[in-house]
Image (cartoon, rainbow, N blue to C red; front, side, top):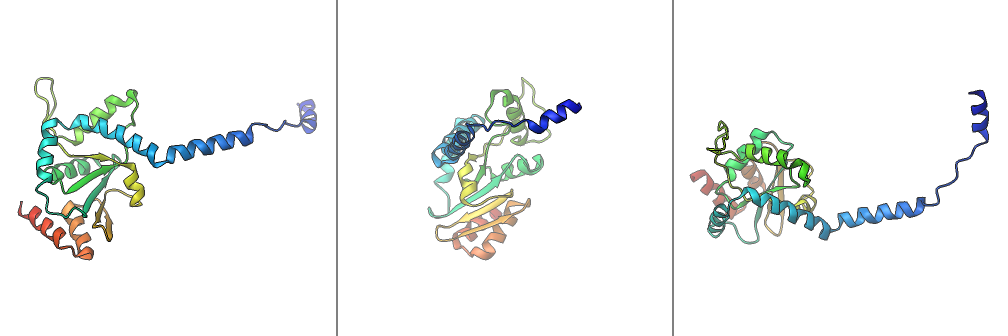
Length: 212
């Protein structure tokens, strides 16, 4: 040990000649990953997988409902969600949003990512939070009825509206943006946003939802 300590005093570790090239390569990879085009490719693949949970009949129904919306084309309402919120809350939001195409539920990614090794985890989670009847126990003969929300996987929207906490509701009317966070009812989020926005069409939408 003493000999090793003496030798250590005279030893020098050669400088890594690839350090600069490695740093540049890492910076380029990071920059490419963050490009809007690449992020959109990821989002498109997420959306493709999310579509597996929405039957074609459900999509057609949503298109018909979209044509009956009362918000202006320049107005958008997004509800930002994540699998990190309690499952009961997520399921509640999904149940409430069915039949309300004016509010678009948005997620940053899929549970467990895109890997095949996490497919069972994804299917199990979605099957649980999209159940219409939370007490339903799925069997091969009688599968549970699922909610059919038009979920969008758009990480770019999280960046666009600087979403750092979920659930978060964003009302974008084109000339201004209003935002609120909180794991409360959708009507509460809408009404609190509209207290500041004072939007006639959003007011009409809230009245329509309350009437239903």
